[in-house]
Structure formats: C-alpha cells, structure tokens
Length: 336
Ligand code: AHM
Ligand code: MG
Image 1 (cartoon, rainbow, N blue to C red):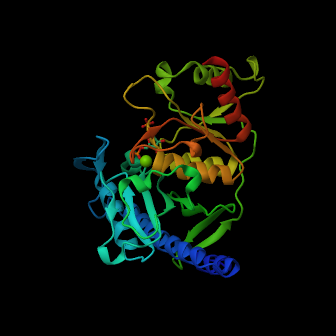
Image 2: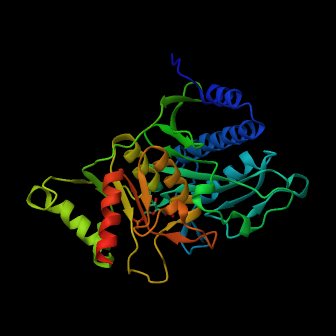
Image 3: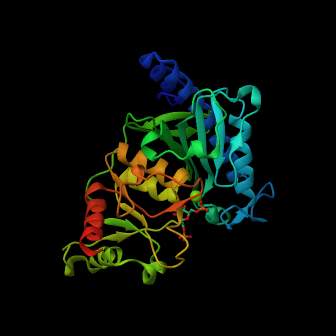
C-alpha cells in the first residue's frame, strides 16, 4: 500500500503553513486542475477504445491540425475548472479568444492559461503527451480582457504540467521549488514521489529537432556541432541525443536526469519567431525549470522577462541544465 503524501494532503499542509487566503484559493484551483489532468489522462489512455484517436478535421488558431483529443482535452479542462470561483478567465492553445467566466463569477482572482494536450502529434502512436498550465493574477474588480493575460513569465503564481506516459505524473511550482506527484491508479490519488526536483547544472544530453538544422542560426549550429564532435571536438566529451517531439516529455526527462532542450529561432518560416508558444508552453516550463535550478532563454533574453504582446505568440526556447544553457547564450553573444 502506498503511504506517501497525497496531493490533497500536500495542498492542505501548504495552505495551513501560509495562513493566507490567496494561497488557499490558489491551491484549491490547483486541485481542480489536477482533477482535470486525471480525466484527460483517462481520455488519452482510452483514445483508441472510444473512437477518439485521429484528426478532428479542423485547424486551431495557429493553423495546426487539431486531433480529436486536443478538443476533448480542452473541453475537459474547461468543464473541470470553470466552476472554480477563483478563476476570472481562461485561455488555451485550442481557443482563439479568451474564455471569460459567467458575469456572476467574473471577479475571480486568477487567470488560467493552458496547452490542453501538448505533443498531440504523438498521441496516435502511443508516445507520451501532456498538459501544460500557467496561473496568473487577474486585475482586481474588473472583467479581464485578452490584454490582461499579457504578463511576463515572472508574474506567474503557479505553473505545472501533467505527463501521460507509462505513469501519469503532475509536476508543479508555486515559486517554492518543484514538486512531482505520481498518480496511483488503484486509489486515484496523486502521491508525492519526486520531492524538490532539481536539474543538474551539467549534462551530456541534448534534445533538438535536427531536421531543421539547415535553418538554424550560427550559435545553435556551433553548439550542436561541438556536441556531435564528442571526444574529438572542443568539448572533449561525448553527448547523447533525444527527441520525443513532446515538450512535456522532454522537460520531464530534463527534470529527472538533466539535459538541454532547444526549439530555437530559425529561418524556416520568417513569419514565426519560434515554434513554441510563450504563454502556455515556454513560460510555464521556464518557471518550473528555473525553480529546479536550471535556466531558460531565447538565446538573447531570459524567457520569463519577455513582455508578451499576443496571447498565441511564439518564441525561441533553450532550457535545461544551467551551464549548457549559459553556454548557448554565450555563443549567441559571441556570434550575433
Ligand atoms: P503542440 O502544442 O501542437 O503539440 O506543438 C508543440 C510540440 C512540442 O511538444 C514539441 O517540442 C514540438 O511541438 C515538436 O515539434 P516538431 O514536430 O517540429 O519536432
Ligand atoms: Mg503544445
């Protein structure tokens, strides 16, 4: 029998320690997001059995093909959290506009932003996918507009992800370290299995989609070439490569054993500043990575310092083990 600390217990203890209504309310909201993640995990696991595999035949706001499970996951997150009195509005990768709460509840103090099913191109091939979320403060006493979501990553009060892999895990931070919980499928409870997750400062493992290499900028080319040269190159050591094409799975691996993940700026499509989205991918993952002792940058600036100008804006991402991220940033400073 598992006797670890459950998420419910952890939340109750944190709230009692803080003795602050805001912290209690934030944790209550976190509990509802956790429930949504359990439901999404079930929907993903049963996808092929319930006819929800495959494409929905629609595109999202970014012009990307939506999977049926993208839409289902988005609906689950809304259904499981919209009655929480502390949410003022939501925004999602799968919705062009923000999702306001009914007028009677529009004074909630938090904004919830999410990518309901990240890595969904992998979902039909049974590779890990996940949910990413970020919680921001809502302006007091008014109905929030899309502009109120445009806060830098440093303003986040909570960020987290669930990974639906061999086990379902929930990992989050409220700015006091990173906590990892594993779903016990027998009891239905998230149990604290990874207390105070930390990322080693050094690594010999990188993750990048090498099919884009001809579009990379010089600093990224230099960094990857040096890694690939291994013991025969300037680094004098061999590196290993991983690419899951599921950001949640990559970040989770880095939290467990270190590494560096990159989806850098490239020249593939000059209209796009990067592939990943700032508000519901880069910022929450950056908050988690920094809280675990890692670093996160665009190559030119700390991601969490970037002032967003659009809800669905894209941004280059280089995150993970601190010394490697700092090296890539140094290469940007030296080369550009
Ligand atoms: P998604 O939110 O539509 O799933 O897109 C984000 C995903 C990330 O999880 C992953 O790192 C990246 O896209 C993979 O991109 P690519 O297919 O170019 O390798
Ligand atoms: Mg995504």
